[in-house]
Amino acid sequence: MDRRDFLKSLGAGALATAAMAAGCKNPNATGAEGFALGEVPTDKMTYRQGTHGEKVSLLGYGCMRLPSLEDGKDGNQSEGDLDQDRINELTDYAIEHGLNLFDTAPRYCKARSEIAMGKALSRHRREEYLVSTKLSNQNSSLWNYKGSKEMFEQSLERLQVDYLDFYMLHCVGLPGRDKDGNQVEPMEAFQRRFVDSGMIEFLLEQRAKGVIHNLGFSYHGDVKVFDHALSMHEQVHWDHVLIQHNYINWRHASDLAEEAGGGDANSEYLYGELAKRDIPIFVMEPLLGGQLANLPEFAIEELKQHEPQQSVASWAFRFAGNQPRILTVLSGMTYMEHLQDNLRTMSPHKPLSGDEEAMLQSIADRYVEYPLIPCTGCQYCMPCPYGIDIPGNFAHYNRAVNEGLLLAQPDEEAGGEERRAYRRARREYLKSYDRAVEPQRQADHCIGCGRCLHECPQRINIPAKLAMIEKL
Image (cartoon, rainbow, N blue to C red):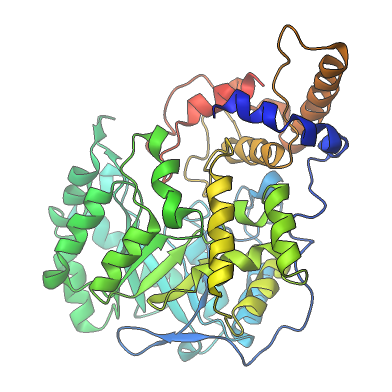
């Protein structure tokens, strides 16, 4: 079913819900204000054992979406200066309630995440927390020993630690861009960033010295590079690997990647390959950038019928932690409500029944038919040189699709009532668009320069998607 036919099939539901378009909010959706209520236990967190014997909380704190002093629209929290007081509060609460793993990277929050987390964590005893960060040497100026080594040492300094519990090669499987701006294919980028630079050898030395306790990599993109990295396991002995894993990606990641040229693998495959080698697994994007907390109406209704008191988001976390080789599930928790709801879900983690797994897979099978943009709001594409709020545009579009607020333009033979309904819905959609994304940051400002294309871990054709939104 193409996008136009799909939107036509949603027409009846859209007419019933068009009144919500002004705010583009789903009253049943799980958001910062809509998580399940109840006690947050302090002593029931589920823990799993790491390679070196660490007791790791099944819920980990992903530090890519830290709160800012002026939170952006549509969940873009990293545009303003970071709010250190709120970060300290969230960190303290997490540790008090059993969460002990904090994962960051040099490029998160415009290179401010490591600094902020160093300030927050240094207020606690070192044995109270585990810290994870990455070698984010995607820029070709760092494809050398000197630049990458300096990045590693800078991470230790910013985090205010003398050893790293977990360290990863960042974004393995993505293409790169050389100093002249030419695209470098994923396999060559891996070779130049980590092997030719001498950094894998250096990091193995640091692990032997105890400066790194666990060495791994984070994977996005081309599965051939994932397989290649795993072929090095006997020499490197990967202690952990970070993958994107949720009940959509379990069997449909390859479907979502088709228009990006393919190459992505389902997390079912990734998990299986890692389990064969007994490599512990970190999970990223359990909510698929928040999309699994703001599902289409049919999915929300089905989940609520099954368990009315359980939040929509909690189903995704239960799935993400369901497989035994999962060591920790990372979540970017900007609000206290996010943190509290996820702590409830993992304190303790309740395994899914066979019927519940089947229900989630049925939802996933239907979900991938929706013409959504697979943006996770990671902000790697930002800032846009032309001021476009790329994640904000995509988040608003996805909400409108989920809530049935976009109607396909009527055919020539359509009746007067259908045409009037379309005009009303379009007018309300455009009003909601102006409220969600400032006009000067909307899709029509894209000139198709392509600068964002090499930055997106989901390999979205960003200019093409912005052009599609501009035509709505």
